[in-house]
Image (cartoon, rainbow, N blue to C red):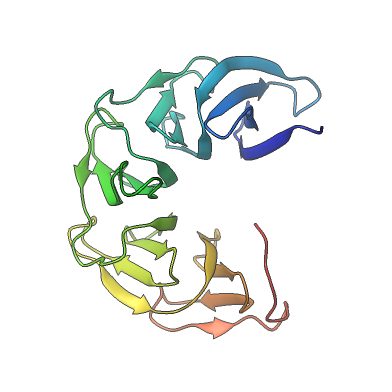
Length: 219
């Protein structure tokens, strides 16, 4: 059986990759030569769903049991906060360094729902889900202006312009996979059945991209 790789992060001098070992465990690999060779750096880490890196090149991994981090470009990993154990599905880091973790429920709400924020490199976390009725988060995106976008599993999109203290719904019933912003400030929503949506004004208005048909977009 071919290995299943779930998440990857490319940095200036390192690439980290997660390998699915089972339904609950991943292995982490790292490459220092643009992917020509790989070394196993963490054999058994809780299932990894996402990576993110801050301006200080601290790498964060969202797992089925909270957030792990590395301060040496993925060579060594530690649990960021041993008491924070939700299923972290997506991570976004704002220009000011605040970290947002979007959680997803598994097993009847045993892992906590909604959005959490850390202002100290993941050492502690606080719930920041005010205004979000559906708490399963599938994508987070920190915008260049300091605002944060999030998408929920039932297709609702929310925006916060006050560091997550309050979330305002801007779209509904959009079956989303992910939200990203490019270097020019354009925001893109990749959907499962309605093509790619685009905003040029930080989410105030949206158009459907005419480059890709309104069909399934896998990311």
